[in-house]
Length: 266
Image 1 (cartoon, rainbow, N blue to C red):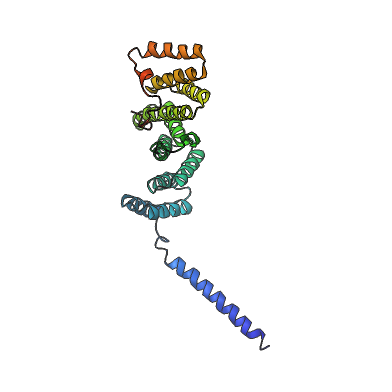
Image 2: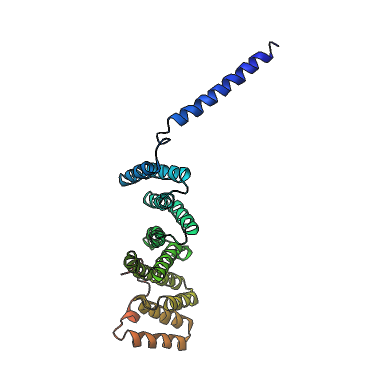
């Protein structure tokens, strides 16, 4: 009897402490009595003050407490925006995908597509600004491609959206950037004696980015690569196409390995 009683007392004490802690946590939740309007307003206020973590907490509570209210869907978008501004691209993209999947006919779907493009666009900048000393043949410009596709979907589905014009401008930038990447990698292969791979990279650039100025450099790369391979017919075809499309070109006389600003699309 004397051995059992202390155990009961200890268990009761532990239970009291657990309840006390739970009550304390509930008491400290300043938002527990807030209406949906107040939660949304405070979340937007914190967002305006650039406290994106606090803002996200408020929006998450809003969505959890009022899942069918008028603010719930908007809260999902706001959370995605907060993650974007807080430099959490993976969380931002996950939030955007969730919103788009759950709300395929939402009036702000165009904004969600635009935000998806922006998140990937910012991610692509770190990739595109990398130093040319790195082994770029092993890098993947996936973010740039996904950004381009998101902007393109926006323009196709919502041509009159207020975000379409900016999306078009960013698409033009991305095209040039991705074409420059292809050209750089082709030169990387050429420098290492992989002439067929270099020629193929130049051809891929022309096939995929035919409206960019990098086509001139790609044709010059193909000319030199085919010349190294002794493939004179292909070499002469590359030269003919180059001079037909760029009659004043001096690309053939330039150093094919001179590539100091490959990441600059303009």
